[in-house]
Structures are given as structure tokens and as C-alpha cells.
Length: 299
Length: 321
Image 1 (tube, rainbow over the protein chains, first blue to last red):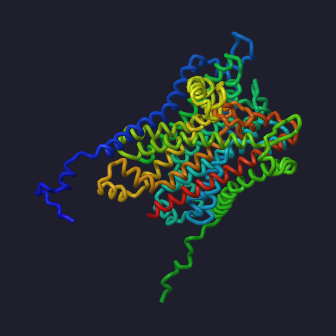
Image 2: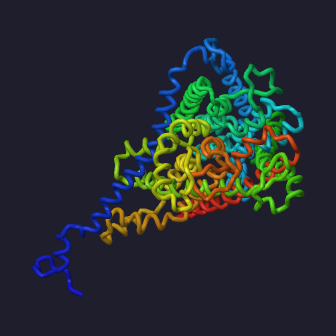
Image 3: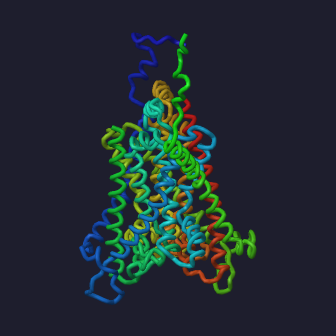
């Protein structure tokens, strides 16, 4: 083995060091960079295409009327045409879901972080929670059907809200756990040193500190639930009219979009686009809001 | 001498009255809720299993391999739906894995300044928050018409290959797979990026120090090290794709004839449930749909558990290191 001598004119190594990268290695580098950029561009294309077509197709139908009127019967022209009942229905069912899932979700998050952190039982509960979050929403719908629709013999807002609640619980509990983990241990020690018990430490010190993170989780869960369609199709069904109460079939924005998208009537297709724009705005604003909350938290 | 420590009789940890009661109730509540969440999963399994009993009893395991689905004759076989779910999910993976990996590499390497990388990552994750039904609407009115020439080209040029052997008319297995790949891309992209970022920097430095170019480092060092995490992300995405409902229902064409051609319409388990459940009349019909739900539940449960265990093991390993 020869010792590298920078002054020797015969040194192969020196020659090699002065040469540019072999053409095939250079080609590979440049080629892969181009491929990666192109693929990322393709990956982003659908997002822009979806937002663009929903906006351009939906914006013309947007007026005050759609927020206060009922859907017009097919064939009737010139009358008021909107989907106020579906907006109210969606808000009702997401509300019911939130009432069910927020307490259970937050308390489970508290359990995972404050009560049994690191133990086998906490790890198993966390595993089950993650699994629950990945159960297809259509299965959750079937479950709510079996639990509530079959027993009450009634498609209802309660059954729809129950299904949404089950979907929201794991999202809230996992984000709550993450939020609580960010609270410094010294807070817990400080509270305990002042004689605070678990109840006081958790609810008066830890949870208030973690409120932005917990709110993020709740908002994410709400955004997710507002867009869920499949579980509502066999729990809440749909209706062309205002809902009569919590125990009757209830319209919702996603189901309206689904029904009207496959309708042969162009005016109903148009309503589907406008409803999509409203739903998309609702969901994207909620997601953006939750992002901003956590960003401020990390700074 | 006076007793020097009269204080020692006072136990400062004692809490009495309301504080003690609240603390007790609170603890019970927290434990109760945690177990409730675990119970919900069992409850779901129980309800689906219970309601599927009738069909399980009638058709047995043969249900999974039978192609007959005739509501009026009360003959039910789940093969077309199981086949459609698996094929559409695999098409989705074929397209989503390279795209997701490209996004993950681009957002974890420093090709671009951080101020551009963060928005790219954010936008890809934004796709995940778009409701499935909206993607389906876009699929029907924009995606399928735009890609119709491609489907026709595939039929004309490669019609002699069985995979492209049927005349396309719009909705098809291929379209469903492509729409699904859009929907699972955020899962693969986000998790793979986290895994790539967790690769120890020493490995990268070592590779670079030996004279490897950036892409040689990525291919020969980073990707192999991160491979188990990337596989986990892919399996997780597969679970998502199998359970995805609305968008697929809207673009797959809903035909319960098994056709090897990807340009022909197909059907999936979630799609048939959405289409038939609310209108199902006979108990056996509901039972058969519940049987399908049970099959889907078992498949996704297995796939997701595997993926989550894989991803968790890797997280634990990198955190421990």
C-alpha cells in the first residue's frame, strides 16, 4: 500500500481526487434528485386539483340562501334551494359525539400520562387506543347500528352521534397524552410539595397548562368527525327536511354530498359541490386552527 | 427535657373531607374511562361477531370463496368484495409507496430550505384531513374524466394483456386504486419522514466520509436502516386503504363480477356495506353483510396491529439509543 504523497506526480489517488465524479455516479445523483422532485410534485397535484375544483365549482352556488333554506324537491325551479337542515344535522351529531368523547378521551389521556405511565397496563391501553383509532369507520357505523338502531328500532341523530363519538375518543385521548407529556415534571413535584393530591395536581395544575394541546386534539377530532360519511349512512340515514328530534332520521353534509353527487340531476350535483365547499372550509379551518395552536405551544 | 418533636404527630399528607372524596372519585373515573376505551374495542368485535352469527352458521367458511351474491335467492358469497378490497389496496400501495418515499426523502434531507420543506410536509398531511366523500366527488367529476384517455390508451395498446383487457367506461378498479393512493400517501409520507429523521447521524456521516454521494448515502445507508419503519408505514397505509369507504364506493363502479382486468369496475367490502346495509331487508342479508364486516374487521385488526407493533418497536429502539 502506497502512502499518499501530495507532491508525487504519479499518485493515482491524487489524480482521482482531481477528477470529477465518475459520470455514472453523477448521473445517478442528478437523476434521483430530479425523480424525487417530480414525484413530490405529483404527490401534491391532487391536493391543488381538489381544492381548485371544489372552489371553482362550488363558489357560484354559495349564497345566504344555502344556509337557511331546505333542499328544493327535484324538478322545482326558482324556489329556494339550500342545505340548512344538513348543516344543523352535522352540527348536532358532531355535538353529541363531542359530549360523549371529550370527557372519556381526556380522562383516558390523563390515565395514560399521569396514572400508569410506563406500566404494562398503560402500554396495553395505549395499544388498544391506537388500534381503535385505526378501525375502519364503516365498522364503527355497523357497531352503532347494532347497539342503537337495532335496539331503539329507529335511525337517529343519537345513533349517528354515538358512532362519531367512538371515532373521536382515540384521537382525543392520544393527543391529550402527548399534550400532558410536555408539561414539566417540576410542576407535578411543586404541586405535590404543597400538599396537592392527584385530583388537585391534575385538574388544577397539569390540565390547565396543557389546554392548548388538548384543544388541538379536540379540534382534530371534530374536523375528522364532521367529514365522516360511512358511519352516518346506517345510523342517521338522511332526510330532506328539518330533523324532528334527536330520535329521528337526521340529514348531514357528508351524506348529502354523497347522495347528490351520484344524482342524475345537474342541479343536485351543483348543490353537492357547494356543500363540499362549505364542508371543506369547515374541516380545513378547524385543522389549520389546531396546527396554529400547537405551533404557538412549541415556541 | 421537652419532647423535641411534637410536630411529628402531625401527618401532613393527610387530606380530609371533600379533597379526599374528590380524589377518590377522580381516580375511579380515570381508571374507569381507560378500561371503557379497551372495552369499546371488545364491544365492537362482539356486536359484529354476534350479528354475523346467522350468516356464519348458514354459509360457514365457504362464504369467503363463493362468488354468488343474489339477494332475492338469499345466496351470499363474499369473494368479489374481498378480492376487490385486496386488489384496489395493492394498486394503491404500488403508487403511494414511491410517491410517499419521495416526499419523505425530500422533506427530511436538505435539498430545499426549511422554509419550503415545512409547507410541503404540511400540505401532504393536509390531504389526510380532506373528507373522503369530497375526494370521491372530485373523483367522479374531475379525476375519472381527466384520466379517461389514459384508460382508453391502456386498453388500445395493451388490451392483449389480461390486466387491461376490458373496454373502459369510466369507474374502474384502477381508478379506485389511484384515488386510494392519494388518500394513503400522507400516512406513508409522514411516518417514513419521522423514521428517516430518526436514523442516527453517525451513520450518515460515516457514509459521506467514505466518499458516498448524497443519493448513495440515501440508498445504501438511510433507506436500509429505516426499512423496517417504512415497511410499518406501508402496512399501516394498507390498513387504511382496506377500510376506506366513501371515495372508493364512488369511483370503483360497484360491480360484483370478478374481472381480472383493472379497467373493469369492481367492488369492495366497505362499498357493498354502504350500498346495501340501510336497504337490506332479510335477516340473512344483514347477516351476510355483517359477516363481510367481520372479515374486514379481522383483516384490518391484524394488519394494523402488525404495523403498530412494528412502528412502536422502532420508536422504542431509537428513543433508547
